[in-house]
Image 1 (cartoon, rainbow, N blue to C red):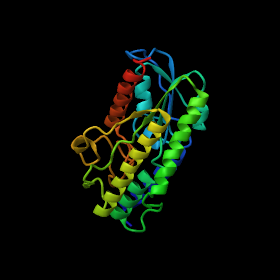
Image 2 (cartoon, helix red, strand yellow; image 1 turned 45 degrees about the horizontal axis):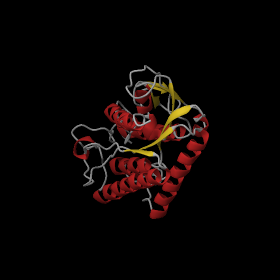
Image 3 (cartoon, one colour; image 1 turned 45 degrees about the vertical axis):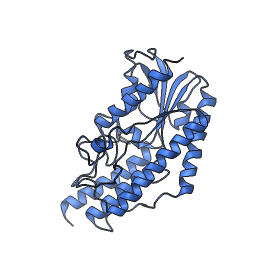
Image 4 (spheres, rainbow, N blue to C red; image 1 turned 135 degrees about the horizontal axis):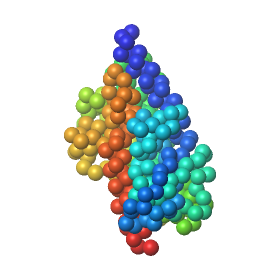
Length: 276
């Protein structure tokens, strides 16, 4: 077996362990600097989310066990004037003094990033190269995600009645035409199916926001520019020989993407906190 293939497989096994760790712990903390025009410095902020929000392997790494980044969007929002907090399990981090809670979940329940990674690995390295499920999401799966999101929002509100609760979308990996490229080694039918899963996740998140009154934060930007195949990607692709090298885990936000998500959250805060 070529050395590059061995390195790639080891990296992907590490990624699987990282994803499991990052989905069972809260997003990393940040330090308030008081430079936000709409949030009082020292406001308590809790960020709940999957590895998509934690930024695994995106430098600087502050939690080596799950490669959690110090440049995830929670840190960048915290730098705008709120104090971050994380505990495990995540929901225990929400206390009555929280005034802002952001939530980025749902993709793992649909196997979205896992399927992107598994299929890319198999296509690039061979059918037996990577384990893991790559099953398309069903309508029932999407309904369950919507219900789970609404339940999380309701639980947060019960624990922190004064908090603004935001459901933050995942950034898109594929554009509306499900175009692929060298760093997104998917077959056309695979790309189309996974784009459909992504759109289903967006809709489930929107419906959960509508039903609970949570603030919906759209994050996609210009999909023609910022997907994994775009001219200015906001998410990483699947790069060989080491998919974990350099810019973070495959199919997760890069530094530009995290900054864009933080900007979207800040824009939502300008509205929500400005109206209070």
